[in-house]
Image (cartoon, rainbow, N blue to C red; front, side):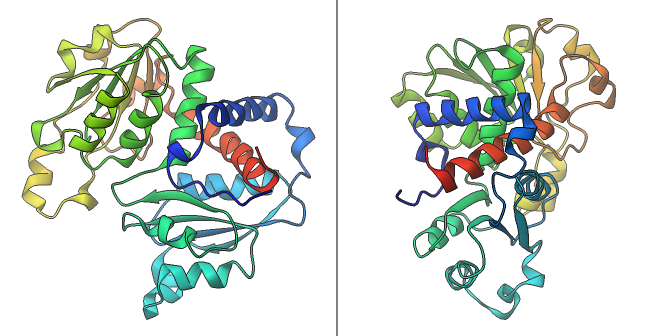
Amino acid sequence: MSMRHFIDITDLSVEEVNQTIALADAIIAQPDQYRIRMVGKKLATLFFEPSTRTRLSFEAAMMELGGNVLGFSSSDSSSAAKGESVRDTIRTVSCYADIAAIRHPKEGAPLAAAEVSDIPVVNAGDGGHNHPTQTLTDLLTIHREKGRLQDMVIGVCGDLKFGRTVHSLLTAMSRYAGNSIIMISPLELSVPSYIKEELKKNGISFKEVTDLDEVISKLDMLYMTRVQRERFFNEADYLRLKDSCILNMDKLARSKKDLIIMHPLPRVNEIARQVDDDPRACYFKQVRYGKFIRMALIIKLLEGF
């Protein structure tokens, strides 16, 4: 079996994505059958950037498969603080672990690690570029809550410029037939042009608006994102834009009854707390699904598709 890395959602074919979702479904249905699947295996979580959900999700996934976990949760607690490169770090970690999940603030760092790694590397988020395991989480959520991944009107709202989860999700959903995209953001935070070109190439219709109110009634799913303070160079720009897209109960009243509301978290104030109790809110379900899809991905990368 040739070694596979997972750096971008397109590293998996649509069929392989569907296989991974099907395996996650099987794990959810019969978790006891997978309790010892990774006994004797070790996952390294190399997190050069803070994370709660992604890191703990990877660790919980490996532990529930019977494996072990080692790693670090910030660059300050690794040899990166001494100037070690990510390539040297992964070469070292390859001596200790069977698979590695890497989060890094610089775009392309997980790819650079994969080029020299002796073990499978999973991109757990690189700067404002990609977050493909969050995308698998999102796809599993949509599949389980809507029963399909095609023929939907998809709204993405908030920081669409720096939001790596949005970039990966739009790429993934553009590979399923019949989807259309509505992008909702201030002009300064609109989707990068390379993502729009990819949508055009795949024949996906999309439009850009600045007001959630005018389109919420058309949506089958709404993917909210926070305006990310850590991606801004100018504090004044962040403060001006941070409240530009907020979902509250008044807006939700105009949406479809079977709308699903998703968010990669953490949330700041872009979704009112009252929305949490609405049956259309799925963002905490997403957190749970994230563990199961990462369990499935670990199995697939270590045992083969």
